[in-house]
Image (cartoon, rainbow, N blue to C red):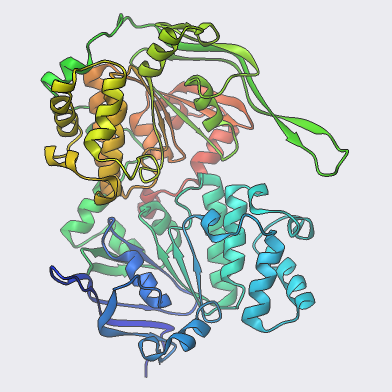
Length: 559
């Protein structure tokens, strides 16, 4: 008799289409025991989230299960009607989603959202549900839960919001928990807190957990067993240490080889293997001197935000987001910027690119002078052309109504860098330069994968021949193999075009591979700044050492 909490046998999921059916999951099997965390990994499109949605009975239409079974504690979920399956969700199966802001209603207080779910799922009175909601917030490690019950989601940090989402997933005391990329957007210290919480809940409540992620370090330090998927099929499965330390399949080995290491710098990201030819010559046109000097510098830089206190007559208070005595980035250098959420990284990036004005201090570019002196439209336009941003989310960074050729042509024409006759040629060359075919120009953003969209974002940033790139978490939403390709592309472009970069990331391994120097921020100030090898190998700050110790690492499996 089967005693597994979750048993999936020979699962096949098909999406019918008039041009031919698409099989998203093929002959997939997996089991999860009580008190066990099972990892599900693979590249984008491997079928990981599709399996999770099938377990929840939330397959997107027209997807259907065409073969196999999903058994929860001996009950076949595929034989339940919609109303019976609705009673399973929340009560027997809980789910933690990737983005906590899409899981929470921004207009409803956190306590009301949690107590309403508890009242519905457990059939309790409003008063009892409120009491239990407060206890659940305390259980997931939220301080002063009674006070937090009266706050809205925007008043919580990213890590705290994710804790609330976990409390919501546990509202009905489920037997099985599905965690779909629960730590993707979190910094390493908050990530560790969330993962430790999931492990504690799994152990204390004897829950079964399916952990869907592309982060191998998270799997290495959290999962008991792991399943590797590719193109909808199971490639390899077994105990985590066995699969990740001694993989038997070529695909698993290639996937692990794509992961950037934190214990040393690898040459594969530092030595470009190809040049861009004529398009690179065009991109380098108009560059000023290339001397080894400070490309930008800032002194006594601060940024304050006004925060209105609660109450009618309480007035306002000031919050200092950035307090930097001095910072410089040399021409052609990549400066890595790391720190916890709320440390001031993004605010500093917006200040350096002129998207925010500082409260005090000055930012000066060698080629443009002080930003406060950019009074004329011509000087401001020239600065905007030289300083570009690659954002974290390739999905929201592109206008979905515009074709790619127009997305890339618009900035070229705006800055007068090519005539209308030759702009299509420049667009095709830019796409080829970032590894996309020329016919991509005729498509819309929704027709591309996440990695391809990020390449389009890079091409758009390059289209105006910039000299400085702010890379704001450009690879955090990408799986490891695509991430490796993207990092190699950025380093190749940096070498070939002489670009200067500020690389903001919470992934310490990525920062080590791409950065010449690293700055560490905490509570608006720099706690350490120095050469990359020095900061990672012999950090002088206790906080930097704490970040390094808490970051999930694959190499710990072999230690």
